[in-house]
Length: 196
Image (cartoon, rainbow, N blue to C red):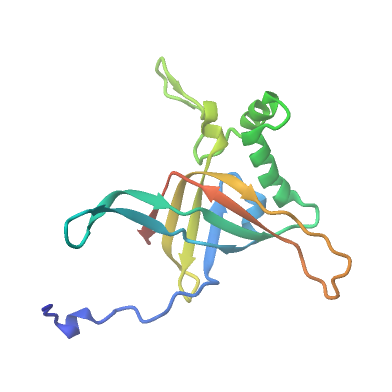
């Protein structure tokens, strides 16, 4: 039997999380940030191992975490600039026409991470911009704000890259004006949650 002291288990924060109180920032997607309307905090799954016995099978904790994709929905601007940002990133990774698409995208994106400027340390070695495939990734931050719009929790995603971008459906039979939205799925190495 579990013994608990009910007074010591009372919550100190009685406000609920508001799903509209968030900010999403991605270093490689400055034009998408402003138009972001929806983003998820991806789920995590820890698998288990089942040990067979002559009676009941016994579940044991697994050791590998599986992270769901980060999904982002945004309003598409009139010139499709934010959609093109993501489209070009995907084309740069997949280079459907030639390998030059990969290298030109990598060369255009030397500031994927904050503080990537070259630094002369005064020694024989110089710390420079990211090289190789590192420029194909970016970091992102999802900031959850309080009911008073003060940042309260920050979720930091490491090494994100897009894996899917939804289609845009144009339709002249729509009666009321509805604006185009697009959805993008990202994969990442890891995310960490920090209380501010």
